[in-house]
Image (tube, rainbow over all chains, first blue to last red):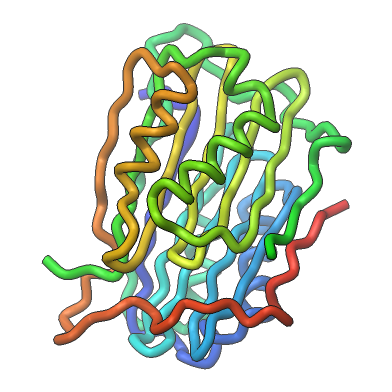
Length: 139
Length: 139
């Protein structure tokens, strides 16, 4: 079945609590995971919560990666949404699972944009118009 | 079933092509949708692609909203991932569906972080540590 995108929804149980509470480590891991999947990183936004927990997003030319962590439960919810045939979201998932020393993981793949159109293709080029690529901090 | 988060995966078909190709409109819509859901926006990152298409993420204290659009197909893939009981992701979805003049929409709700823990709760407070909240532009 031809689709515009592949969306991996992964749940990581019994992770290393310190690793998933370290916003810098989590950010580095997600960026690296995007690169390992063959994606092009065009933006990111990471946040650490008080007293614990990290939320982060990496925007890629081919869609996005997100993570939300609950160190108090050793749990992380990871999404890897990719478009196009040149990226492999499973590689990102496999890398992240290892980095966070995940003891148990589940992953579900959902096809996004299954359209009844011959010659369905991801946005051509996928190049970002620089003038509109600003990331903004709120508050 | 008690879970840490609710994740709505929505597919919008036959949207207004101009609306989903306008990065500013899409950004405003996602921020407004987050607010309507009762969420607190803490970061965002939006990008327009050449020759068409928009990708964007709004990070909220309660997780995230994302959108990827294919104006050439009148299609948009929207995710609304929320944690905690005070936010209603369905309200965000209903708003976005209207804003983009979506003719057909599907939505699927997936529970994230279903843990066998009594008194399961979202990260307390959910307040962002300002020093680590910087959004970064790549390249």
